[in-house]
Length: 229
Image (cartoon, rainbow, N blue to C red; front, side, top):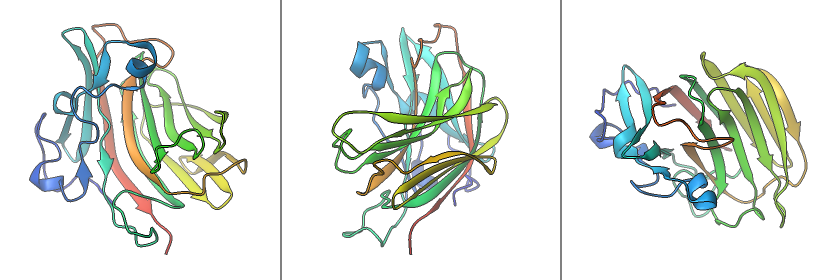
């Protein structure tokens, strides 16, 4: 479990000495995000402009600079002896929970996801939760492990503007999403069976891009990860 009580880290310095054994900044400054890859928008990942640790929380300061809409996608590192050979930040089945909240920022989104280690998508699947525009409802999305992309969506009736615990359970032949202990649903269709890694992908332009003046914060209070014995 990570609860960010090792100390504060200023903007631009995460993970720094306090957290570098357990975290990476994820995608480097200037890495194209999903919207830029698909639509050529002026968006991207800029962890040095976005990430800090304050008051026992990992903090994303989502904003625009010089016309560029900025997000960040940090990734936890954890040992997993069930993967052969062992790799940091890799699951073959398991469970992860996050306690988080976000300011209501239209155009910004979370897509905290398990992505296939192989990089072969959609063949090896994708599991996203919590996902959604930060001014709308939280949902889970499960992209089936098949040659052509198709997915199941599991809506909640909650927004990220208050604190929530979002949990993903991935087991052989089954993916299930829970919000505050309540199941949003499960799927047994074409469930991934190859290792995946966890990325807390926070970006923009899901159904529309944020206005230049839109800014605010996403806060991660804690994250817990369970791996198979």
